[in-house]
Length: 215
Length: 63
Image (cartoon, rainbow over all chains, first blue to last red; front, side, top):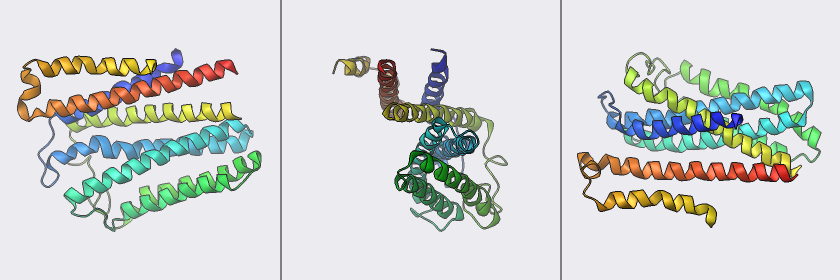
């Protein structure tokens, strides 16, 4: 029962953000208007994805140090959940882009960067499928995971900040922090991020336990 | 099927809600209707997760 507290907390926080996110007062912004509420849903997908990938990376490093296969299972389960969040983030971002920037896809460095990141992580799963030996699979994919995580930081966290970008906080654009992430938005956004990370961890743990059962 | 009963039970209060002349659900751009729909979907998914968790726990105990 003690281990379930984070699951309940995750459900409560996400339920709060889903519902109060629609009802809360939001700042009156040009072009964005009511769609600023997507901050609670679209952006939290990416934060959750980064957290899942960070957890996956951490377990990959841990596996290389300890050689315990359960760390490998944990690492892939988290990467799977991260991939799910990234696909949600990509699709919801395309919808938001269509109605604010005017196109489903722009050559924004952040969009292309996330597309490359998703491909890198898809390759991770293809790589795992291509190796039969369990230990060899775990070791090679753990090394690849470290590479993939670093590439994600470069493509999502660094490159978009160096060039022109439509995303806030990138390419000379002011971030949400500096002008429009006022306290009303924070009140929903941060609980949403924490809630999704907790639910993501929960689902990843289910995948992990299922993998352990299949062994 | 028996496990789905709680899900169906969830819909009952909403049906009752629709019957009465509820000012909350009819007024103000009807955003509360959307909120109710999202809440139902989310509660359903949450229950599904809980049941899945229980099922895996059961499997673990059998092993």
